[in-house]
Length: 237
Image 1 (cartoon, rainbow, N blue to C red):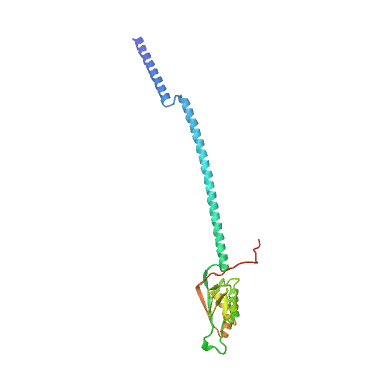
Image 2: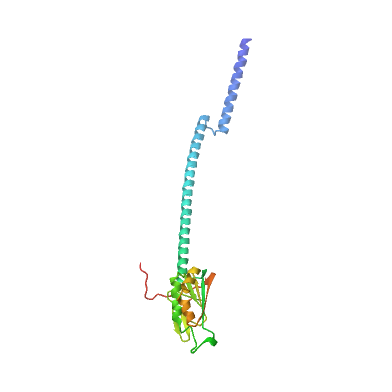
């Protein structure tokens, strides 16, 4: 009886061995592409190593590109700031040179001939006393006026005030009384400069001319509308 049991046990072991061998063969052929588990594990580890290396390379590339992008953005920002500063500086010099309209506080001085019925002897004409206008402009400049106009003609470095018949030429444009002079600056300082005792306003009034000085909170002075050309002056490099 024991001998018969041993035969059955041996036969079962053989069948089990064949079944296990068949399963291993099936797994190796279906899932491991014919390779042994050890070989497949090695292949997976190698592939994982390659993928990790590729990932590290891509991370480094992303960091490099991000750094490059940051530099471009910073450069663009710095360039934008430089352009803005240059534009602000250009606009400031345009304002100083009279090439742009400006607004601000200041004073407005109106000068006119006396009424005809008050004239005694020769008829008074402020145009004939244009040098008093020059004195007024000089006082305003000395008091810190940042922009001046006469009858809407902007004063610049080439502006002339000269007699032309019974009129006055300003920027080659003939103007007639009443003369309205606008000056942007400190209203109190400009007012005090022209209204000082024995100053230009008093001289004009004693000469018989009508003079009115008003402090203005929001004064507008237009840009110089002529042309400026340099034929003899050159910039120094």
